[in-house]
Length: 444
Image (tube, rainbow, N blue to C red):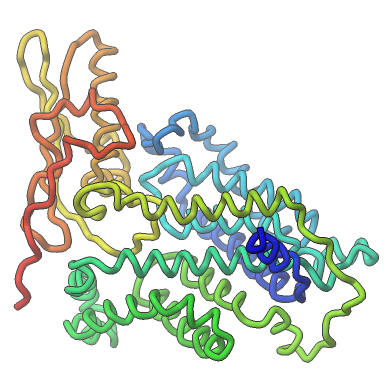
C-alpha cells in the first residue's frame, strides 16, 4: 500500500504543462501530414479499396472497409481532427474521435501493419487522456479561467513510459543471432549501392556492421540515458542524429520524426519556457489530481504493453520466421524474406489438383507480405476453400511455400501436406509451421 501511495503521489505531482502542449502540437501536425501523404500517394485506394480480399487480425474479421467515398471522407476528417489536436480545439472530443478513427484504419488490413502506425494508436489514446490542452490552445483562449499552467504528471509520465518501452523492446528484439551478424542490414545496404554520393559508403560491409551494433546500443541505452537528468540532453541530441539517419536511409514514414518529438518529453517539463525565455508556470493555477479509476486504467494499459511484446517467448523458434508473436512487439527492421508460394487445391471427390497463385486476388503489397507470413497464408487458404465450396466443390488446400530469411537458403515455411484451410487460429504454436533449419551463410 505504501508503494501504491507513492506511485499515486508521483502521478498527481504538479508539473509544468508546456512540454505536453508542445508534443500535442507536434503530434497533431505529424498526423495531418500523414493524412496528406496517404492521399497524395493514393494509398487509400491501393491499400483498402482495390484489393479483392482483405486479411484480418484474429478476432477482428468484422472490421471491413467502407465504400471508397466514405473511406476518403473519414480519412479527410482524421486530417481535420489532427489539426484540431495541434491547435487544442475541442481537444478532448477531437483526440478521442481521432484515436477511434485511426484504430479503425489500422485494423482494416494486417498486410499494412507498421510499428509506427501501431505506435500512433497508442500515443493518440494516451494523449487523449492527458491534459495537453490546458495551455497554449484554442480551448485555453476561449476559457481563460479554465487554464492550468500546471498539470498532473500522469500524462507526461505515461508517454515517457511508452517511449521507454518501445526502445527497450526494440533492443530486446535485436538480441538475436541474425542482427548480431549484421543481417538484414548487409542485404539492405547492398541494395543502396547505386544511391548518389552515399551509395558506396552504405554498401561497404563495415557500415552495416556498425549500424547494427550502434542501433542495438542506442535502443538499449536510450531509456536509461533519457531518464537520467545528467545525460538526457546529450541522449536527445544523439537520438536525434540516429532518427535523422534512419529517415534518410530507410523509407519508414513519420516514425523517426515522431520518436524525435517523443524524445523531447524526457527533458524538463518547462523546457519550452526556458527555450523561449518565458516566465515560469504560475503555481497558483494548480492542477486537479487524476481520478483513481484513471490511474487503474493506466496501470492495466501498461501491464498489457509489457506482456504483449513478451508473448513471443511462449512460441518456439524465431518470430522473424514463424511470425508468431511478431505483431505489436516492436520487432523493427529485423528480417527480409524472399520466396514463392502457390496453393494446391485438391478435389476430395474426383482427386484432381488445381494450382492457385496469389496473383490477381491480392494487391502487390498484400502479395509481398503474405508470402512469408504463415497466419496470412492460413487465412488465404480458408478463403480459397470457401470459394470452392460456394461453387459446390469439396476440397482441401495445401500450401507450397519456399522462403529465404535474411539470405539463408530457401526452405518450406508451411508443412506442404497440411490442409491449411481447416486449421483454426489459436493462441498455441501452430503445428503446421516448419521450423527454421538453415543457419546464416558464412560471411565472405
